[in-house]
Image (cartoon, rainbow, N blue to C red; front, side, top):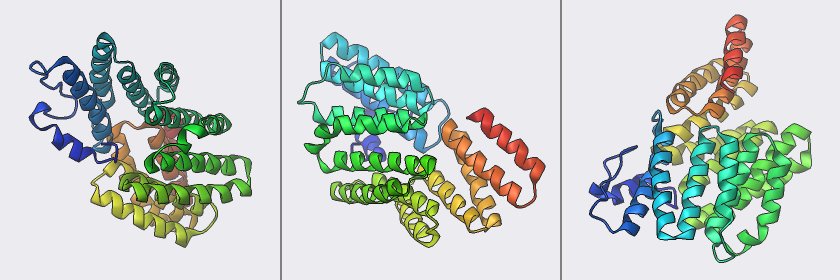
Length: 317
């Protein structure tokens, strides 16, 4: 599952787990093993629920992970409690509960030592995602700078995460502050992230960074280059059967098409994106997609519809 191969992880559980949101039958397992199974089923419920756009999946994931966390506490397994808290923070973040996510991730860090490199790195990355979700970009960049020594001793996958997060933050700052130098640095960071993910064999995260790089190139007016990276990302997520992230790739594509004044193509693509995101309850992404749709409708002369959909996007946001 660390490589983003969630379906393979689901199959590895075999008869222990019947599917998303279901409580595994762990009565006959040793307590330590039972807690681990509960945790992994919770994590998979969260990930697969997002991928398959299953309504209520994050709440079900939280229940399973919370049960596992209590078991780990009883067993006195410090690192596993932190891991469970980290995964709960991820669920809160996906659901838009940013304050709860921030608190949970800070709690997860407290008992860890210098030897817990991988978990500390993952928590720091997730902390930056929370800050990014609330447009606190300089705070997110500070977190990564502070955590840099952790990532220097990490594996390629975690180095990829560090570079990818720096790139995302620099892209946000380039957009909000009009800093061309931030954009140039972001391209370098995205390229480094893609390299490390390729070295680690992480197709999913490689594709995510290709999408992010395409978004940056779109912002810079390099539309042909943006389409090429989106094509690569689309191939990856089609192969992985991930409609949730495919929708994000298509949303970026729609933005590029709007910039190219290909409004009808953009309208068709963004409508499908919204249908997918509505199923999964991903509020932040849905608000962005609705905003793109509002822009498209305005460009084709549907002004009243555009106003209505933009108001809807504001309510969702």
